[in-house]
Image (cartoon, rainbow, N blue to C red; front, side, top):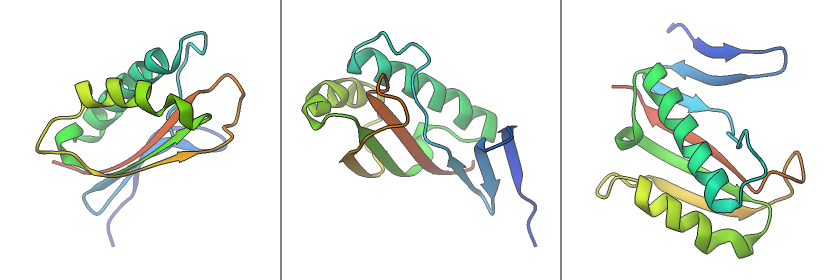
Amino acid sequence: MSDIKRINVGKRMCDAAIHNGVVYLAGQVADDTSQDVKGQTAQVLATIDRLLAEAGSDKTRMLQVQIFLSDIANFPGMNEVWDAWVPQGHTPARATIESRLAKPAYLVEIKVIAAVC
């Protein structure tokens, strides 16, 4: 049986769990919620880059992404930042959903599953 490695383990959750060559990231949100959806998306994607690197992966290895928006009207702004970040030819299976997030100030939350290098 393979071991499970966890990154940034807290009382309630961890930022990522790695098992059988796959890394599962928890939903990531912006630290600075004063930003608009573009700013928050950029922050979240930077965090995802960092966590994937720590797990031994990167954005070219993403398998599936789920994006949660507090307001679907923010879809174009989020996509503008996403499209500039995601490597063409390595786009993951993706779903985007409007959802009430844990705090009203959060505009976007992104959850990633990726293969480990």
